[in-house]
Length: 204
Image 1 (cartoon, helix red, strand yellow):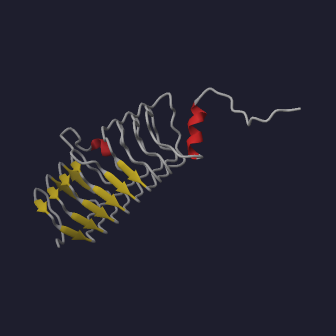
Image 2 (cartoon, one colour):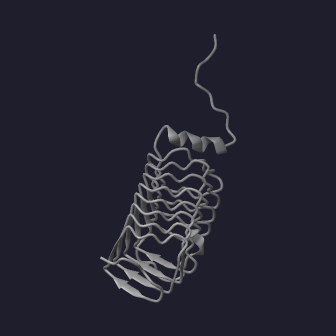
Image 3 (cartoon, rainbow, N blue to C red):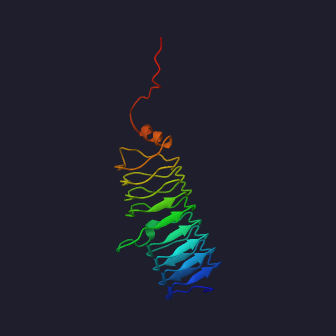
């Protein structure tokens, strides 16, 4: 088990527990198949790093910055990644495995313009998250609270929004081909249509 991390270092299959890295900058390090448990990266800067097949369990990533860092096959479990601009990361190469957030709080973050097919945001709190202009085809949002999150020109082809709630998605401004929704939440899709709903009752 490692007690700290440093810049320009390669870590392979290391286990990190209860590290306090608040407001610390780490640059040009590589983390392969590492596990982080109850670590805090609040307001940290992870610059030009590579995270490959890593797991973050009960970690705090609030307001962390990730300029030009690579995230492939990374899974966050029960963690806080509040206010993270994921669009600043490096997604230009071949990302083999999708990013996953399970039972996390990812509110006030941004995925604007990203191509993140099969992104997982399951059973999360995702309030006021920017998903505009993103390719999120086959994404899994099941069980997630999406209140005040932004969807515009978003590709949600075959995405799973079953059990998701509080979303406002304009069917005319987003691609929803074969996307999955569940009732009664799916009724919110009707709000973007210029239609008049009737309860079906006739007067006598």
